[in-house]
Structures are given as C-alpha cells and as structure tokens.
Image (cartoon, rainbow, N blue to C red; front, side, top):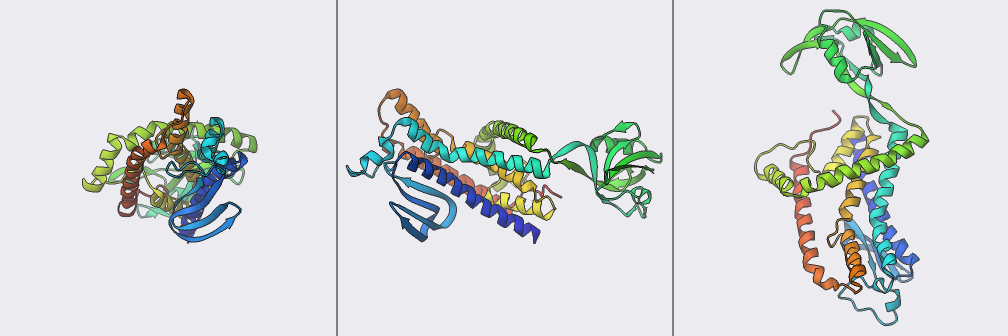
Length: 374
C-alpha cells in the first residue's frame, strides 16, 4: 500500500510540475500584456474546459504534458490588426525571452525547494557511523554474535576498536580481519554511547566464507538546519546540473542510442545507471516509499526537475531553448526569423524524442531497473 501511495504521489507531483511550468509562461505573458488564448493540461481530445475572459482553460485526455497558446507564436496564424499589439512578436525581445525562460526556470526553483526539503527533513546519508538496519537472530545455525551482544536495529556504530566513526567499508573490513577474535563496538542508542563485545564468525556470503557478526548495515541520515538546507540545496542544484549536462551526450549520443539498442534487441540487462522514463521513475518512487524511504522521493523530484529544466533549454526547436535561440539570432541580425522554416527541424527533434521515450517506456515495463532500495 505504501508503494502505491508513492506512485500516486509521484504522478500527482508530475502533473503539478507541468502545471507550474505552463503557469509561469502564462503569468509572465499576461504581465507583459500578451494575449494568451489557451491554457491546457494534457494533449489530445478535450475532456473539460471553461473560458475566463479571453483565455480558455481546460484538461485533455492524455496527461503527457501541457501547453499555453500565446497569440502570435503560431507562424501560420495571422493576427488581426486589433490583436497585433498584444501578440508575442510585437513585444521587445527581452520580454519575449522572459516569457519563454519562465517555464524552464520553474524547474530550477522546484529542484532547489525539493533539495532543501530533503536535506532539512530527511538528510543526506553520511559516510560514517553505519546504521544497523537489521539484526539476524542466527548465523550458520547458531545465535549471531550481534544478537548475543544485544545489538538492536536503529543503533549507530560510532566506533570499532581504535577506529572512531568508521565507514561501512571500514567496519566490514575490520570484521573480516578479526574472525574468532573479540572486537569492541561502540554504539549510539537513544543519545547514549554503549560498548559491546562481539566475536566475528565465518559465514557464507555470495559463495565466499567471510567474517560476519550478523547485521545488515544502512547509512545514517543527518537532517540539517534551515540555513544549511538552503545553502546546500543551492549547491546540489549546481552539482546536479553539471552532472546532467555531462550525461546528455552519453544519453542521446551514439553511446546512449547503442545502449538502448542492446537493451531492446541484444539481450542486455538493465543497469541502475540506465536512463528511465516516467513509468520507471514512478516505480522507483513506489519502491522508495515501500522500503520506508518515502523522503527520498523528494530527491527524485529534485533530480528530475533539473533534468527537465536542462532538456527544455536545449537550443533546438520545439524546446523552449529553441525559442530562446531564435530570439538571440533576431537580436544579432536585427530582423525577424521566419519560424515556418524551422518546422522541419521541430518535426525531426520531436519525432526523435517521441521514439526515444517510447523505447524507454517499453524498457521500463519489460526490463525495469533494479530496486535501488533493497
């Protein structure tokens, strides 16, 4: 049930994100006195609409996005002389640029808010002080050393022998190096430090005999204060932007297309770093919620907003970045660009994106990504 709530939350959030994006175009256009003819959520057949003033608002059958129809942006629609002063093309370039940028700009604002909430409410996993997620009652048919020592789920390991604040890897390595030898573990429980002694025993892990004490490790979370969540949230937007920009060539270039081909036709298995679509992202949100990591859905929303924001700013029609590129050309050349000549480019880009997303969606259904929260 929790997983279903995570999926529903994700879908609702995506619709709200689309609504905010289009609303930003709408509000800025209205602010500059530009006529907005339609504001719709979804595409395809009309399900419901209402007219308020000069704008028709509504919902369409396919919840695959949304749009605002701004007067003067359709190159095949000639405005009347009365409407001409309130069309998009009649306004100064800086106003038109703000109308266009307002949409993708909201994704950076939302990403910042989601990152800040995640940091303040959930916290980043720390690299030290492993968290005990589970204590096994038995190990190799005998009571596990951890159970015998009284270690409990929720304990944080803040020290092992001479190592203070060990990482997960340090704890595992130290345990495996001391099979049959008592080791001192310092635990943080309910604000108090407790010392216990355990003796690692040999157990089989993935076909190999290694030292274990019988616990499953996680990573502790440390929520931060308001000021740090703001500053660190901004830093995460920048870091994620850099990572997304670096990955765009890999995702949409020959390497990425070849990888999709291998997954579709070559029998390759899906990996955690493969691209995902809305279906895969919704499933990941459900898995996060089902595993008790509901707060990490905020991290998913934040990263997704950065990706969508950058994608929208690519200087290709029909993306918002394509419109901004046209305005930049007009500014340099000091004359209008005939948008009808860009229709073939828009069709090629849109067709590629549709086919790509259909392939990713098919893979999300038939070859889902491994569960990141097991």
